[in-house]
Image (tube, rainbow, N blue to C red; front, side, top):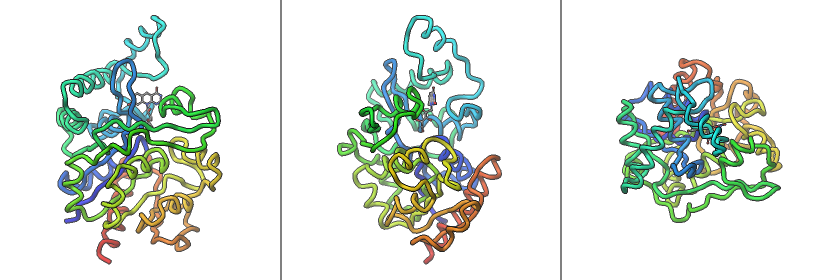
Length: 309
Ligand code: FO1
C-alpha cells in the first residue's frame, strides 16, 4: 500500500483532494493545507483553505461560489453592513459558526491542528486535514502600490493590483505539526494539487523542514495552468506580472528540483517529453466528480510508477 501526502491550497486543490479521498483510505492519504491565506477578521480567525477542503470533503461546499457552505444565508453580514461594519469579506451565517467555534478553541489553547481535527471529525470527515503549521503565517502580496495582506489583495481588491513578489510573514518561526512529521516518516509519495504555486504551494514549502522532508520522496505536481490559462484564480495573471511565461512548463520550472513528475492537461500535450521531468498527459480540468476521481487515479498511478523506479 502506498502512503501519500497531498499538498493543497483552495478551490482547485480541493477538487483533486476530493477525488483522492474517494479512491484512498484515511490510512493512505493525508492532506496538508496552506494557511498563508488565514487572517484575523472581525475578531475571528479565518482559515479559508482549510475550510474549503473541510466543506468539500464533508460534501457541504458551495459549488456556485467555490468557497463557503452550501445553502448559506447572509443575515449577519447584511446586518453588519447596515451598521456600517466591514462586509467586504462575505461570511455566511453557517460559516460564521465555524469561525466562532475555531476562534474560541484557539483562545482556549487548542492548536490549529487540534481545532481542525475536532471540526472535521464533527462534520463526519474520515480523512486527516493538517494545517502546514500551527503558528500564524500570513502571506503578504507585494504589489506595485505597496504591500497587501493576502485577503485584501484577493477579495477586497479582487486581485487587481499588479504583483511584484510575495512574503510569508512569520514562516521562519513556524514548525511542521506533529501529525505531519509522523506521516512523513512512512510516506511513499507526494502529490502537489493544482493550486497556485506562488501563494498556496510555496507557502507550505517555506515551512522550515518541509523542503528537506520532500527531497527524499518522489513528488508529482498537477499543473494549475492549462493552455496558458489558470483554471481557477489569479495564477496566470500573477505569472504575467512577474514577467514569466504563463505556461505549464514554467510552473514545472518553478518547482525545479523538487519535482519527479508533472501532470499536464491534454491541451498541453505538445509539452510531453520536452520538460526536464517525466510527464503524463490527461484531462486535468475537473468538472464532474468522475473527473476528480479519474485525475486522482492517474496522478497516483504515475506517482507509484516513479516510486517503483
Ligand atoms: N472569496 C471571495 O472571492 N470573496 C469572499 O467574500 C470570500 C469569503 C470567504 C469566506 C470564508 C472562506 O472560507 C473563504 C472565502 N473566500 C472568499 C474564498 C477565499 O478567500 C479564497 O478563495 C482563498 O483564500 C484563496 O484560496
